[in-house]
Amino acid sequence: MGACDPPPPGPVDLDPDAVVVFRAALDRPAADLVRFEVNLSPEERARADAFAFPRERGLFVASRGLLRGLLARLAGGTSASQEIVADPLGKPRLRGGCGST
View 1 (cartoon, one colour):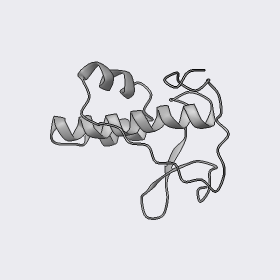
View 2 (cartoon, rainbow, N blue to C red):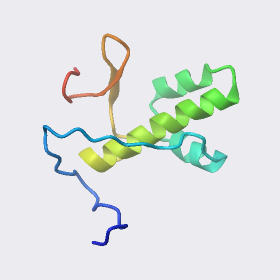
View 3 (tube, one colour):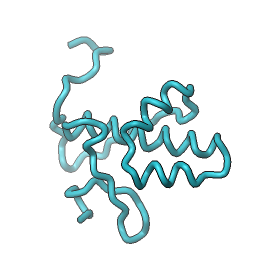
């Protein structure tokens, strides 16, 4: 595998004590937003539809779509199969992960 090749599909073995930071641009073309939106949960779609302005809606859809893709890459499964829940403070957590239900 070369330096620019993506990691293989399936769960990625990370050091449990490691802190990994990912950065992504959220201003995405409409085609990306359509691709991300199909993987959102019904609750996420309803939340996206509640935004008054298209730009903010697009940022939300992109953030959740990219998060779902990253979780699928790290934990395995598909983008649509990732169960994201809110903690008591409203922060997103992966169901069954550290600090979630």
